[in-house]
Length: 152
Image 1 (tube, rainbow, N blue to C red):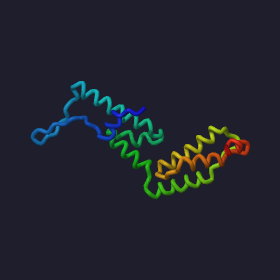
Image 2: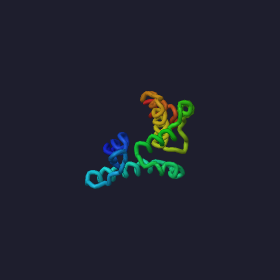
Image 3: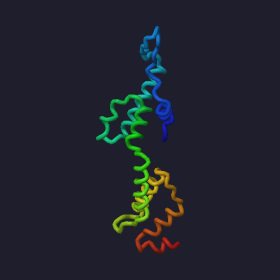
Image 4: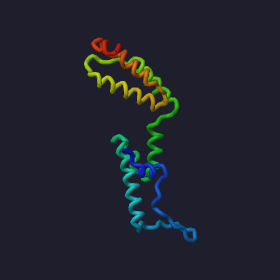
């Protein structure tokens, strides 16, 4: 289930703390209203949710970033890769898809899950595969005892 309120905070950035400028001096206004407190709790929840998705070995690198929007941008930049990296990943995944075969030791659902994971990774990198091609790939890679089912 998607929490759209959390995504609004991520996309629009942090709205707190509020500042006031008087005679050239900027001062932070304290959180006083119930609405401000609820907004602050929401921002803490958003940041915590994003931090949970970061691998443990990278937590310290991102812990100092307090704004959820900035945190998401930094994480995407760090783990997203550049165009050359994505091209290399795409080529590697295409090769894995081309060489995909069902293992004799795995069940049908395990084979399907492995293929589906590979297809999802390709789609994430903007490599579109038709459902018919994926279905044909699955049927062609099945072990010989599935031939009668595959033909049907």
